[in-house]
Image (tube, rainbow, N blue to C red):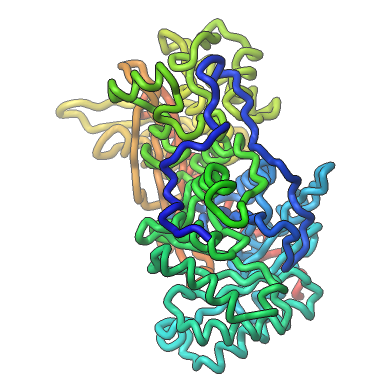
Length: 600
């Protein structure tokens, strides 16, 4: 077995860099020499196959401001299925009636969409180690073709003593009882996680893991919950646990779940796979608690580039990597979580070259500075970089816009295309020189990835300047289709517009973050605004829900908007966040009413 030092990802991989010419029309697909092995809980027939467990909809949504609506979760789950992930952790069903409904909807829709080759993702629900949680999780996921329950309890000394206030004997028994109960419900695919395993006593870990395997667990997930471990520490831990479990290890799949507090989540995950883990838990764009999780795109591309040459046995996944960029964009826009420009694989600068030496090398041979082609992850270079193409302007038709969206990896239905095209025409009339790919993607984010509008912006007009009280007149179309208008004042034109929106919608929120950036250069550039809000305590709407690690959490709601006018883009973003908050409360209230009727 090779040392971890060989896991460095700096070497180019043969066959993964597109040829110099005709890059824009590349349709690079992952080289899958073997089909995806048949899914069997606890067993993988191919010793080199690594299951990808995506927890974007569960751990990822726990990022502050990343609250998703049920429809957004369903759209992301469908996109994850296109990507080809093996397991989708769809949520924490006990958290709220809305969370339960969202997980169950994904189980019914995505969990039963079986492809011709037999692929359908496993749909997983998280639960704490108690009967109420487990039963709720099972009810949510059991409509899926392949349902899984994931239960957990902390095993580190600090968690057992200060959080759980339980002895090791009590924790071990709770873990066994949880797995036994899940199996008694009819669940044959049970994942168990000893929370904070990275800081737990290995002897106690072995004791707990042996017991839960005997109780019926089929996947043992080893979490580095606090991101404490380093690769040469975490990888050998996986190997040690497998070795000490002996024959019992043959009845389960070992998994990793690595947080990114020290920036080592991807490295730790790869080290875990090197030492025998055959499931890696990760999220799109690496979103998640605190500093986030291992990023799916990093894990997948590391294994694609290095899996066949630097591991024994060779490792592979079945991820269709051309869907990485569209999935990243969808998650970014739905959650409101910006991706840093230098983020590996999906950052805006990941395939940009500004240094003269680098540019010279790229012109001569793109393999000089790119170890993978952007097309291999679904990113098509813009016209300015890749050659000839159509220019989208005010005279462009619907078909031209639709064609370019498909080339950029967006699959939009007729209704969404109509919405994008209407906004495209509005902006194209005001923006000279046409719209480039970044402009078009900003409009997609504004129209396709925004929450379904209960309130929609009709117009906004502001008066501001020196020695003038900033005033905004805002007109909204309400849920009943009636236009309402009001004027508000504030410390500036954006604040005035926000106060007017508050008055019209009767929703009070605190603005937590506000950011704006130009989509591209120039005085006529589109501006994209992103905001995060939370309900004011004691107001008409609430955002309180249960947290997976215990206690309650106050959900935050994000919104984004784009326009050539910064006040309009700001108003669109704020209204999108308010719409998301209102819809979340409406679904929660409806679910609670149904629960009351059923319990009566």
